[in-house]
Amino acid sequence: MAWFLFIEIFKYIHMKKLFLVILMLTILSIGCVSKKKYNAQLSALEELQKMHEKAVFDLDICLSDKDRQKTTINTLEIEIADLKSRSNALLNQLSDLSVITKAQAESIKKSMDNISSKDAYIKDLQVSMARKDSLNLALVMNLKGALKDINDTDIEIKVEGSAVFISISDKLLFKSGSYDISAKANEVLGKVAQVMKSQPDIQFMVEGHTDNKPIKTPSIKDNWDLSVLRATSVVRSLQTTHGIDPKRMIAAGRSEYIPLAKNTSDAEMSLNRRTRIIILPQLDQFFKLMEPKN
Image (tube, rainbow, N blue to C red; front, top):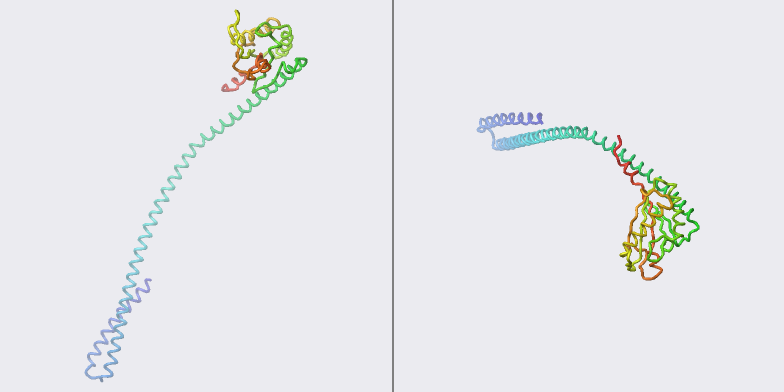
């Protein structure tokens, strides 16, 4: 572009001088040339004038291009400066992020340590629960073995959740409307006590249930009374007759409010009159697992 500009300026100066020279020669010779020759010289002069005007036009275009290019260069310089500024800002942000990451590294490490600790805690719980399930299964098998000669409809042994339930029908334990234990009941309770004695760490609750038939006697006010008195009679028999440590037992009554059937027939009412021995889960083992370890 610089060479082009130089050439155009040179052409302009050269043509301007040439034009003046030709003009002077024409004036000097105008009086001594023929009309034909004069016209030819005039045409040549006009042609030179056109060349001059074109050179001036080209020069203007060149100068205009130069201005546009200068403007473009200035714009590019501004954009470059802006890009540099943004790059520096991003570098600063990355530096800040690097600092944050370092600060978070310790927190992440602590979180991972906590996860590992909780994972170990969960594994301990799983082991303890598996051990508890094994104990419950062994207990159920022992109870079923001890009570194998008892009618299956009169006594039921099952595991629900983490507890073992022994449900004994009313007719095995008591006479109707009474809380006095029968001779047959003592035989059944004696077999249950043998299994309980083999697991001295186990605690259990004796829970009385009734049907919804109202009862009121000089010694029994209602079904609440009857359910609790029957539970107490079972606990007392296990303690005094069969030698179970009383600290291992709880007596409770549920009255008529957790029936197995609707109490619309004698058969249904008979199902609802029952005593349950609930072998409680050993929660202290789980509480010990939850204690912080040094």
